[in-house]
Length: 630
Image (cartoon, rainbow, N blue to C red; front, side, top):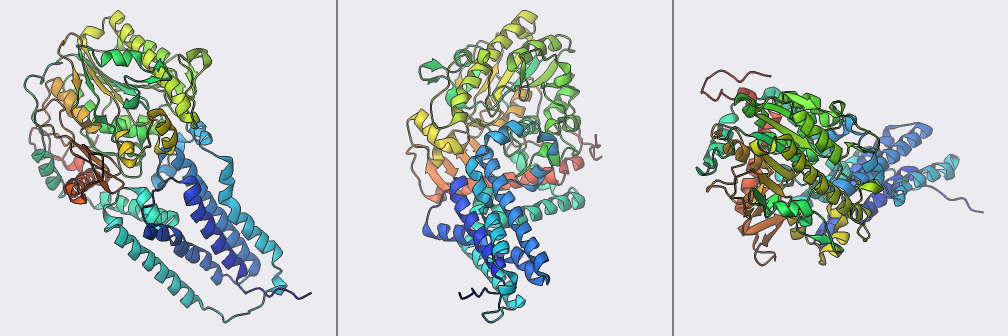
């Protein structure tokens, strides 16, 4: 029987092809990336290849066959782990992993339930190339390998690889001009340059960020200050100081999206108490209000509320910049005689809160050790909302007044598990276990808020307080669009996805009597200036990108961390400009001025954070001295 004549580098060739095809197929099986045309499809097909040719090609420098094969097998394992990890991460965040997230090891234990919930049996497919490479090494006899064709020199090999990379980048640039300089959308990067090259680009960006802080000297601050001052919205004289001297209670409602408000699920009211608040005479209910968080999720919403700055692109500021100088809400409140605190029954180190709160001038952190978690009161993330609110009110009674406290709820958190005794409505029925359980945990949280209001009234704190509540980020990601389409009885489009980022905001002022439903387009960056103005605290010298929602000058313009944007006339999502009235795509030129401004504002915010520029800011009274590091 004639022996098969194998090319000299058979294992390397098989490895490149196997990993290439596994990656390409994985794009479709595990990532919901929109492909608009044949050119984008072709780019997606070739974009893993240049990296794989390079990384596997290093084996050409290894002389010993056994060592070379071990190297190739190791690379196949590593690339498979990269794709598998991104797939699991994508199912919850609808995004790709960034390098700073890999160093958030203190969160890994607490996130374990969400991670396992997003694993799928078919994820073993990502390791198909490992099996193929292993079999190639075992089944191709080394003594049978012969040189059957002209040897391809290493220089030619790597020159061809570089040419392929340049070809890929040129096509990507044609599809998306300035891809590497103005894109905040990691999915767009992966579609154009591939998962592996994206991670290399991310490494470059993070290295550049560290260098920016080292060489920052404050000269960049003037331009940003001028921009902020030019966009400052003067407060409404009728609302300015309305809540002066009152306690301030800010409640972050975990994963609460606005689509559940005043809505039902299979005939069951989802949020009966919050529904009542939407019509309460002492409540301003904002139904056109958006979260603006990124990968930092709840920690991003905290950062935004405290600073009216955007979170960082691809990371959580709570981890990457906890040593910065900030001009936070807590700092301003403290300067005006308030006792400031955060109440959250979870580990103090989760999201690096114990360190970050010091930078934000939070005077007291009531973490899990401040609470007594009895039998049946625990949830995956700490303490259930009802006992959390009960015990928190008792702690508030001991606080010096006036106080400002931020409360962070826990129960309505992915994977939305609930004990049987806490289920007040049945599960929904769809192809998404996540959405099915979501309605139950939202209903439980609504009941918890109802009891919280009752506790505040009984404690005597209610009448002299202002209560601000907002959804911190989405609970149902775009990966559940099919189930959401079933619930909403429509096909979910990119326009719908953008609008589903609406979260409710309530500003409840007991005894005010002039509350109403507010249709003003606004976002989380507007919370800080709004609260300070209600308390009669001026913000014209503050470095903030949000504006008072009650101001006549408030602009209907919301920017998402990923570069999407909302105006009263247009929505920009997935590089398409939509007309709000017709809900159809319109001329891109209508959105371009807003896109340019969004890019500018996001870049300014990043510069402030990455360069730690607020350390160079003059004192509010105009002192030329640099602001002291806390």
